[in-house]
Image (spheres, rainbow, N blue to C red):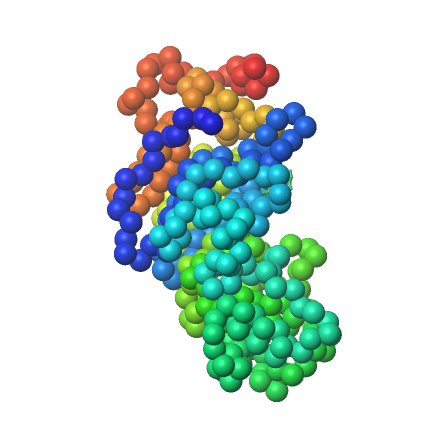
Length: 351
Ligand SMILES: Nc1ncnc2c1ncn2[C@@H]1O[C@H](COP(=O)(O)OP(=O)(O)OP(=O)(O)O)[C@@H](O)[C@H]1O
């Protein structure tokens, strides 16, 4: 494993729900490991929603799944995920499933409970709640109905079967099933085309209902900056397996520091922007990422040092964390600061 980049020394607040440190999730690839998540650190406070953005293939879903122990067999995981005083990475396969539901949950994509067409909705809830907690059937029903109501499913539908609902309602029922277990932390992976029954306005409404009623800490994986602007407190920008910038949504959107964030948000970002702008080039093959900063082949400001070593994290007073050599110019020699020419970029890539 590579040496760890110097990271943050902030004290965990009493409200820290999840503390992720130097997390790596690697898949087995034909030509060596695919480093889909490669040294990621962040914290989530109680009730906080962290948006995770970045182009396709940067490792967002792998990170979300890794946090819940849902990576496919054969994927390797290393680092620390501290939740409820325990390192989930060490809990591995045996203890992890027990953490799900009551402690951890997944909504939107890959819900942890699938709807059985032969079971009434009421039975799904009773089974899910009572397999995690010793509560009476009446208490399970009370909690189920309250959760369903908060997501817009009327109590009169409680005894219906899954096929009696629309796709969007079934999606909300699955979200309610995850939330009825009152998880402290959920991963919400934005539905893509296959599940695209929920439009942006609905997603924002559901997220706001979830926040008001349940306030779990949430990692929200999305391509949609409008959703980040409206539903998230903080945002983490992921590029090629690493978080290159994280901070409050307001600060990062108003004044992005990392060249990738700047490119991603475009020159004229506003909170109503809904699409990510296209950036010239493509993210690297994570089986063979470029040396140094992985963004350097596409970075308009790349310097010699960028092709040589990974930048350390710079901490800002407002809590922002950015991984870019440009923010540590004082510590570089003049050779290291010299602009990287296009030819050098290609040579470094081929090395
Ligand atoms: N099961 C797997 N086996 C091998 N490689 C995988 C597997 N799942 C994902 N990858 C690879 O890991 C990298 C990160 O993929 P991931 O799906 O996490 O990215 P993403 O940022 O979530 O993309 P998207 O926004 O398109 O969902 C990609 O190179 C992908 O090809």
